[in-house]
Image (cartoon, rainbow, N blue to C red; front, side, top):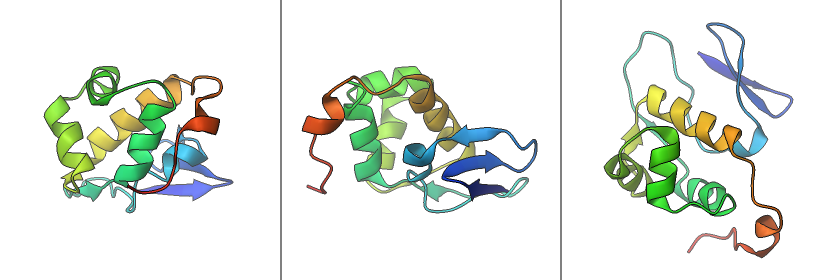
Length: 110
């Protein structure tokens, strides 16, 4: 299981920080260890987080080590495995936003 504390997402199995507040908004469910299910990602938030890093879908997929098809399905509303969500969160956490992009990229849904 994972939990949020002080705007951060933590992994309950080892207590390590998974993502900061921006990244924690990507998911709408917590992963329960040992249970296989899919997690739906907030598509607009994922698009925004990729955009402020100067990434398109291909760049995000490469950085996270997952397929472009998985990114495309996630953005279309299909669920992803908890391990995929973790890969996305780690990739986004590792690469900071490009200075100035947060101020000019529209965060509203399209």
